[in-house]
Image (cartoon, rainbow, N blue to C red; front, side):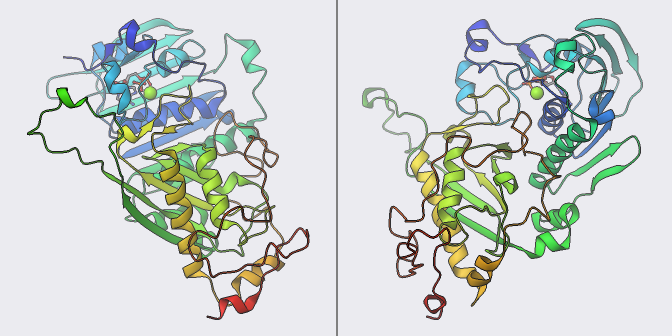
Length: 435
Ligand code: ADP
Ligand code: MG
């Protein structure tokens, strides 16, 4: 029995639609997400010519039988979703059933996949420009290898928008790096025709993964943070009283958990490209959380610089709507202000606790630097994002020197920003750190 079904029109029409394949990194993103959803523990990504010529992703996940392998290339065919209700609690990275057909319509695809079940053969499938050219049995290990050759070979208009190989490769690298960060227990590799770009065997903790990927220096400048809070109410609307079963115990709204790493004040960046936000292991862009982070660092670093933050948030799937953006890089929280304040306060508390005696002063004297960067130069963390984002380009609130509200955690800490007479730098009084 196959696992993949074609969604009914009624469900399909409720899915945020749009073109997801615009460059090699977006292909890699979809393929990586599929491998992770398939439960893979080892994922290998190979690219040639920045991904234009070839992208190959191999995993040791659950694989597909022949029927599923064919069905996977149909529009809205997915094993991850059945009903419109499932859209309210998506626990997988994918759910739209559109990535493989979109990719296959603009490239030459070879799929090799095997479930590894006794007595079933693996399948090899060739597709070009959306047409199935060949299907055959093949002896294969459990897992899936999908190769995408000649991306946009039949859509010259889109091919024209591809940047230099090095730029495309940088975007791919950023993407593999992010997924490697959020899954330290899995083995990730990224190889170009000539180099090993990422090699990250499994490790026990995120800190070790940061060390593997970014090295000792970056890790030394980061501090861990962890916090959790019970969610006040369940994310889904309660049934009306007359429909409620009185014997049913009240639903547990679950817990909001935060973990991650944040930079000491000395480490300052010129843009927000070193702020990574993961919600339920999905890398997202989010203005709300970006704002919470900036609030936490308010008066700790100058308003024109940005910290390095790796933020991992975990919450029940019902609390977050991931069906709002075609590339699944944006989400909507059901309890926005609770999450915003929790992130701001947890980070702020950690920052205040961790402050070294003269650290903040040193931080102010340090000029923001562009390196060492967590990213290859001029690369934004998500595919499709502009390469160098001017500050506030996303319409986020401009930064202010004067806090609009009292410092959230320790109101006694007076950073003196208000008295600073309009200078670009808020004044810091070292004496406030002596108590
Ligand atoms: P979605 O991920 O939204 O379901 P895709 O078009 O990306 O849609 O994939 C379609 C289906 O193909 C998935 O639902 C899954 O069942 C199957 N599939 C894709 N990639 C893999 C893989 N690497 N391993 C196992 N199954 C896969
Ligand atoms: Mg997918």
